[in-house]
Length: 78
Image 1: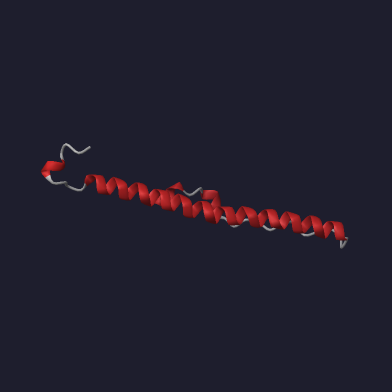
Image 2 (image 1 turned 135 degrees about the vertical axis):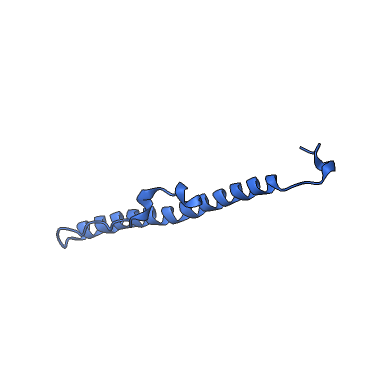
């Protein structure tokens, strides 16, 4: 049930940054920066997926608990 709230695009891996065209220090520095950005995207997906699942599970638990029978004297306790 909760998995339907996870975007389908997140099921695909985050691609690596493109390797540098030449061996210059600037190109490698640019690659490192881009690769770090890709890692940030991947790490955010993990944290966001866990958060979505936790919120969904809490919602389902609250909904289930609200349907459990209560003693008759709790009828007026809204």
